[in-house]
Each structure stands twice: as structure tokens, then as C-alpha cells.
Length: 86
Image (cartoon, rainbow, N blue to C red; front, side):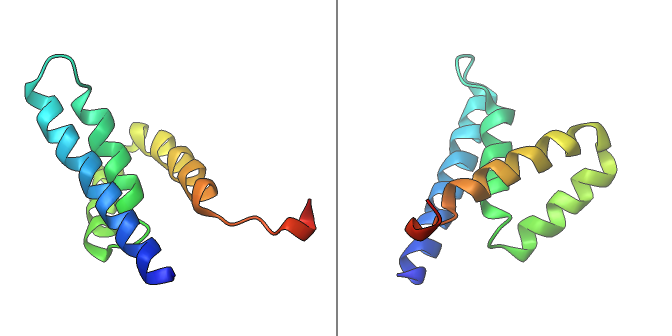
């Protein structure tokens, strides 16, 4: 099951990155927003994306805090809650 989850996360992340790239050229899509969402999703699985995000953190520190908050929210979406905790 974890292999299916990993593949689903990679597909979802790259889907958002591609939509973001299209959004850079299409006026009705917010390209940077979709790219950031895709990178946040991919950062949980890809070392290359993690390195790229570290570079962006140094270059654009004002946006880093928003990205960190968003990554925590996304990780919460994929975290499995135990029914006994409810």
C-alpha cells in the first residue's frame, strides 16, 4: 500500500507543477501558486526538490514561512488518524 501512496503523491505533485507551468502562460490560472503546491507535495519524497526548496528559502525568505505552513497542512492531509484516538 505504501508504494501506491508514494506513486500517487508523485503523480499529484507533478500534476500541480505542470498545471503551474501552464498557468504561467495562461491568464486564468495562478501559475506560481500551483507550482508551490506541487513542490510542497513533492518535497516529502524527492531529494532534488528538497534541495531546490532550500535554495529558494535562502533566495526568498519572505515566502518560506508561507510554504512551511502549507507543507504542514499537506502532511496533515496524508497522515492517517487512528480510530482508537477518536
